[in-house]
Structure formats: structure tokens, C-alpha cells
Length: 458
Image (cartoon, rainbow, N blue to C red; front, side, top):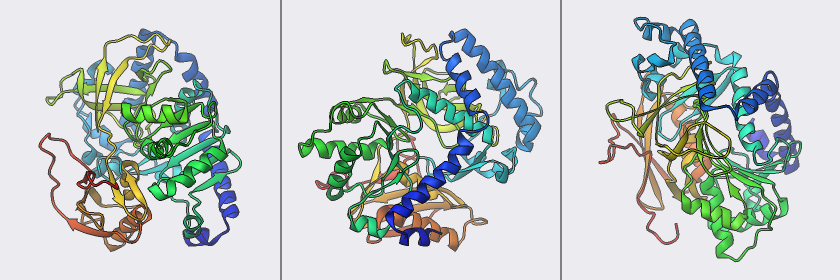
């Protein structure tokens, strides 16, 4: 199918993309989407006490659904008294990523053919495949759209999207064309696999010509374009872009300042995860709010006691197809005691840790950011964890921990091809199969170790 797509004319590829989105959006924005959006919007101004009542009820529904439909949770909670009471949450075992991976078939409550499949590596380098109910997908989009609507966004408004979609052909790159367009929904998808200095001029000039109202996607890719524009005295037209919505990566203050300065707009951040984690949204006052309607957030220290700053353990209300209850998501946050005056009474987060802007550099395609690196696990099975190390321009080394009962040569080919799509065909890729990937001295696992950042042309 992909080979056929690659030889089709550019405008036909755009039409196919538009058709694909029309069919996909029927699922995402059909069913109970409008009902969810209305409910989320109406509840957004409730008091913290009222929000916590909703949270308690949704927690109870989530746990009861898991016990009823998941053999894993039936066994796990069999000796726990009243596990669906949020007051008893500390009695429930914490679910690790590895436990989720190993028990995924027992954890799922529906057949993947009846839901929406999400194949993700995440930024911890572990391969996980989850399935969402159609209703939960609609609810998750309702949360995202309600957040973005505060800045005027709605589906159908002209949007530039920087994501991990592999949509370009060799003809596109030869013609310095690094985008595809959904004509129906007015979305232009820009490749994040070709963020290279010599290509940035074409990205930037096309963005200026396209005149998007919103930019969504990997902030590290958008940042490279902003830096290039500033360094080369480009002036992005003012009053064009109403907001930038970053995804998948941490937004640093330096990154935020570059984006705001060059694109002359605001940056509104959000946190979630492909597994189905609850949401954290940035309000117009630049404060991050836990969205209590979407889940439970526990911040725990090394001994799993409640803390103000520590690892994030989540219970999601929008992942009933693959229940996530007390799930150690691999990130960390610091809570804030401040009170926001925006009208949203959800608790505040001071800082989100865990997601980083680590990257691998390819002379052929430029920087491959963390989001695209984690997506090399898509369509693979049996890869428990990996780490990529770069010590030179010519070579990357990838350490792999595999489940030998599942992993095979065909999966290896898919994994390498995923890397080729992102890093190009010239760089040497060396796979090393190991039984352990050590953590750093800090105790933190790093999926990417780039040891050539100091070189001047990176």
C-alpha cells in the first residue's frame, strides 16, 4: 500500500490524506463527542469540591468496569476491600510499564477489532499496544478540543501540524516539498523527519505562504524553524497564528521564548500520553492545571508515599478498553500550592519533568526528536526496551532488550525500516541485543544518549 502511495502524484496523495481523515474523524467526532464536549465545558468552572465529587464517581466507575471486564484486575483486587472507593486508592498495587506490557491481553476489556488501537513506544523506550473504546476516543478529543477552544481553535480552522506521520515520497524531498495537505479540514502536515538546516528555508517560506491560524505538534521541530527564521532575518507576519499547541515533549522557557518571539503568538502547553493518561492543560494565565474530570494524579516519593514533587502515578478515566489504574507512567511532576484566577479550579502543577528534548542527528535528515525516536517502535512486538546512543555522525548504536518468544527477524526489519524513515539510508545502524540497560547515576533511565551535541554543526 505504501509503495503505491509513494508513486502517486502529489495532489492524489493529498486527496487520499483528506479522505483518510474524513473517515477517521467520523469516529472521533461522532457518537457521544458533542455530549462529552458540552459536559466538560460546563464543568470547567465548578468548584474544587464539586470537581472532586465527579472524580470520586468516575474513579468508582473505572475500577468497577475493570474488575467486571478485565481478568487481570479481577485477580489483582480480589483480596482488597472496596477497591472502587477513591479513599482506598493507596491499597491498590501500582502498575508498572513492564507489568502492563506483559499482561496486556489480560488487562484489555475489549477485543482490539472493536476499538481503536494505539501503538506507541512512549519516551521510556518500551513498546506498548493499547486499545481504546470508541466512546473514550471521543471523550479524549472532547477534552483536547475544549482546551484548545479557549484560544479560538476548532476543527476546520487552518492548522499546521508537526507530527510523526511519514507522508513524504522521494519526489517530495527532491522538490524540497516537506508537507502534505488535508484539503477538507485545512490541515497541512509538515514532516518532522527532515528538520535539517538546508531544508528549513522551504518549511518557513511555505508556512508563511500557508498562513495557518494554529500550529500543533513536536515543539523541538517548530523550534528549529523559529531559530532559523530569527537567525536569517525572516519576519513572520503578525496576527497570523493565534496559538501554538505543543505535543509529546517538554516545553522549556527558552523554547517558549523563541516560539513566542518569532511566530508572535502564545504557546499553550498540554500533557497526556498515548497510553491514555489523564490530561494536564495550560490555561490562558500560563498555569498548568490537573484535569480532575479525566483521572486521578498521585505524586509519590521513592517509598511510594504522597509528595509534593516526585514520580507521577495516574488512573485514567478515558482508557476503559485498557484500564490504567495506579499506572506508573514514567514521568515526574511538582505540584503547586498557588491558586489560579482564570476561573478553572483544578489543582495546579508547578513543573512537568520526564519528557526531554534529546535527539539523534542525521546528516541526511537533520535532527530526529524524541517523539519520532519513540515512534520507531510502532508496528513492532517483542521489544521490551531500547536505548539509542550516538557517538559520531556516521553511526548510531541501539541497545535492545527483547522478548525472544515474540521478537523475530521480520520485526527487526520493521524496526530498522522505521529508523531508516527517520534517519535516512546513509547512517550506519548497529543493533546490540542485551539483557539490561543500566540507568544513569541519577537513577533515571535515558532512551537517547547523544554524545555529539557539542559539535558546532549539530
